[in-house]
Image (cartoon, rainbow, N blue to C red):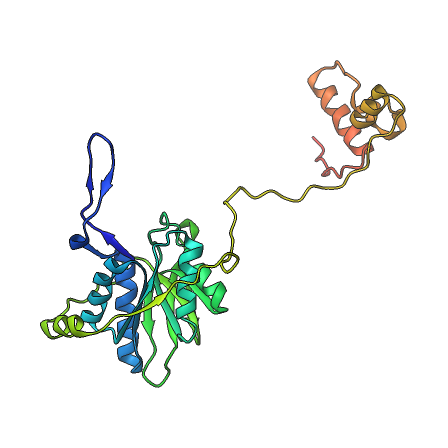
Length: 279
């Protein structure tokens, strides 16, 4: 993602203005690029930098080329919704063995784009990574990663084969581009393709909501009148054989005697009481 790291905010209107000259990769995307470059160096693979946006986004692609990416592809289109961005990326990444993304992008920091891309490509997904280590050259595509879980916990995973991985910005720091890399990036042509975000192509997700268990099916209250149905629901007026009337009987007694009556009633209702030691 291309973002202005030094935006200016109007103190009166609150309007945010950006400048292409100060636009760079987000910290999370820079960390993802660095991890991809490290893995490519171990495995002897090719790194292709892909972004979605207008022509002003070429600055981040040239930054990726200067740092060591082999190719750069820009999906032309001013799309902002996470579903549209994922659809545009998935159309270009069909042949990719691994897809590296930042865990938070421009879509309100939701981290939904890597998840949607993994679903569209039918690839495994490892999201929110905090540690990444590549296997040796003899085992290309194999990784050992650690991802963040809720409650301060961590999960260690072994990744093999096609996968979409998203990393946090603090995972690694993008290497500094040398002068030969910068000159090569200026001469390299950036491939431009059209964004395919036709209706129905994206995966639709709903708004987050609290978990609600499924409702239980219960029998309707019986009774000809409303009063009878209320009695059926509350158990008021039932025969004492069911124990309901007995449970509503007020008792006035001394503490010791009241405790004995409570224990006796619980025993009659079927509760298992521990044996009491003799005083």
